[in-house]
Image: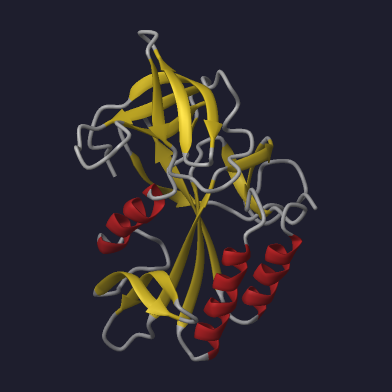
Length: 246
């Protein structure tokens, strides 16, 4: 997924009211950007951080800037826009580029299911069980090389896991896909100390037949695209050198 408009350097002044961020452009101007991220953004919203903004001239939008990336200034980036994973993943699903989720003829986003919920993607193919795919954006990293989810308590996320478990019980494929939106991590773990209820629900969901997949991303100021599968922390392929937190 390429950014529609070239991104612009800025420094974060403050993030507030969850969806607003005051920023200073390189020419000294101060602007307010939309922050499309309802999470805590732990470790990603410190004043003075180098960030990348996307300008827009859409007359329907009150704010003319959108916060897209954190630049860690060491060659690595984190994508902070939680709408990006679904857009990047949809393109990859339609192109048959997601390992384990190929061979489906139809990719349907935002399909109603469960208790007044919408699944991120319903994959369908002749002669194949429907695949219900829930996607979560992962941006938290508190230990070198390790990505974690969630970054705050998520009752909604726990509800989604229960609904995926029900789909699995009905004979469908049910997939919880964590998309890691940062380039400086090598493995994934649930943040059990932040939300023990969610971590326990994830364990129950796997036992109930829900497949857990973790995918990385390639991030530059020009585009965010799907990367390679990411191993679970402590499992085969984990190279972070540490055990799970919590």
